Image 1 (tube, rainbow, N blue to C red):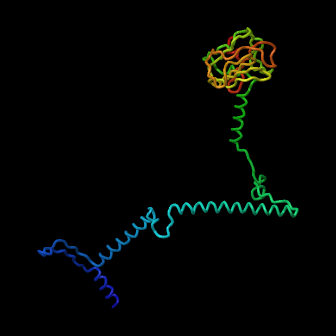
Image 2 (image 1 turned 90 degrees about the vertical axis):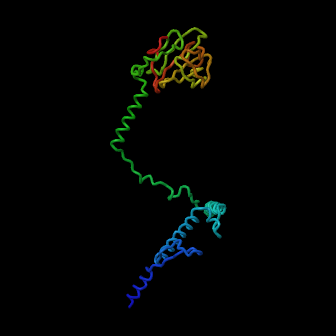
Length: 287
C-alpha cells in the first residue's frame, strides 16, 4: 500500500501539464510550454539557490554590506584597529609601570631589584652552542688567507707581477733620485730632488682623494686612478688641487717643497700603490 502511494506521488510529480498563451481576440495559440511539477520545483529551487549565492557574494565583496544595519563602515573599522593598537600599547606601559613599582619595593626592602633586560629567559645559553669546522670551510679559509697574504705582501716584487706596460706614466717631477724604493726599511716610495719651486704634476689622470697637511710629511696629495692605482706626493710646499678635483695626466697639482718633519731638504717623496700594495715607481717611470 505504501509502495503504491509512493509510486502514485512520483507519477503525479512527473505528470505533464501544458501552459498555453492564446490571442484574446482570435483565440489563436501563440506560445505553449509543457511542464511537470518536478520541472517547476527544480527550476524554482535552482533560481532560489542562485539568487541566494549572488546576494551573499554581493554583500560579502562589495561596499553594499556597509548599508546593512549594525555593520561597521570604513571609518568605524579604522577606529577599532586604532583602539586595538592603543590598548596594546597601554597594556605594555602598565606592565612597565608594575615592574618599576616592584623594583622600587624590592629596593626599599633592601633586596636587589630584578633586571628584566638580563633575565634568564632572555639570555642566550652560549654553552649550549657548538661550532665545528667542515672540510670545505677549512679549504675556503685557507684560500682566502693565501689570497689576502698575496695581495698585501710588501716584501716581494709586486711591480714585476703586475703588467703596466700599456700605461704611460708621466714623471711627477724631473730630478735626481736620492732614495729609492725599499719596503724592508718602510720606505715605500722614491725621493726625487729638483729645483726650488718646481711644479709637481699628476702621473696619471684621476681624482684627488686627499689634499692635506700632516706633521711628518707636510703637504700631501693623493690621487685615485683607474686599475685601482693610487699615487701619493709628499713634502710639497703648496697644494694646487682640492679633494674631489679631477686631474689629467701631466697636470700641475703641487709645488715641490720641504714641509714636514721627515725631510732633510727640498724634494718630492712619490709613491705608487696598487690593490693596497706599494710598487716601485722606478720600474715604470724615468725620473
